[in-house]
Length: 357
Image (cartoon, rainbow, N blue to C red; front, side, top):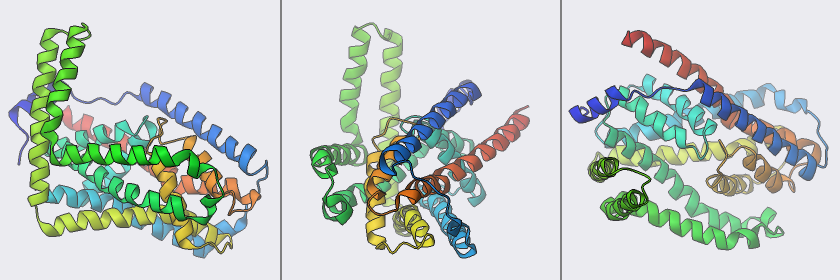
């Protein structure tokens, strides 16, 4: 399955370029918000108490953390790989490994994780995947994770002991119901009845045209592109559903493994520090934390993720360990992957520029 001639012309004339200046601004914003989040944990939840614990440097903990990291990264790549297989594409595992880290970098350095999807579509296009199929693959992969998280969040939010005495229940219960319904309905429409979105989007384009925000020519162009991409996406999801059953099952299985490994890092850190915390309680708190992070407008949920994590785990961890575990959790799940992603991106762009000369 090759990209269409029309897509070739479109992308050859508009090659995605990485703006290092813009990335630097996003990085500065990410850093500032992250520091603000850590300060919030330090000031409000740990009561200005912090101490480094050498137990985190135990060889057995380091080995376990490395093993969990490998599982985390591998499952992240495999869930996307088998989604693509179900759509009829097989990307070399080496290329998929690079894509994992490029996605981690872009999705965490840009607001609302918007850069991750664009980066993946661009990267997959470079490896022979059409725009429609690449977009479908990234959306389907995201939806699978959302279905897991959004299905489990209400259960944990209403049953976890650490949250029962917190005002978080009353504050989030109404918003939780609304967000879950809206998200699930939206993605159900996107996946099952994507053509339903064509009319409202077309009306929105006409409205912008009447307000003179876009010209007549641009309105027609946008409408054509929306029609084309929506129909392509609808066909792509049909291909996914009708694809190899094993590939579909493996895409779901590795999504579950990816999320389970992601949610296991705090439990591992607390185990290394000598805490006896039920695994299900730690996992549940991370599920709810991740759910809240989905609605964070900041790059990589920076600032918000640290604050929510500190709030949830303040009743479990000793004050001097709270900031330490919060940082260690973000370091393992986000910062390491972002560093690897930046290195992979730089090397990839250098090779790409040399190839295009």
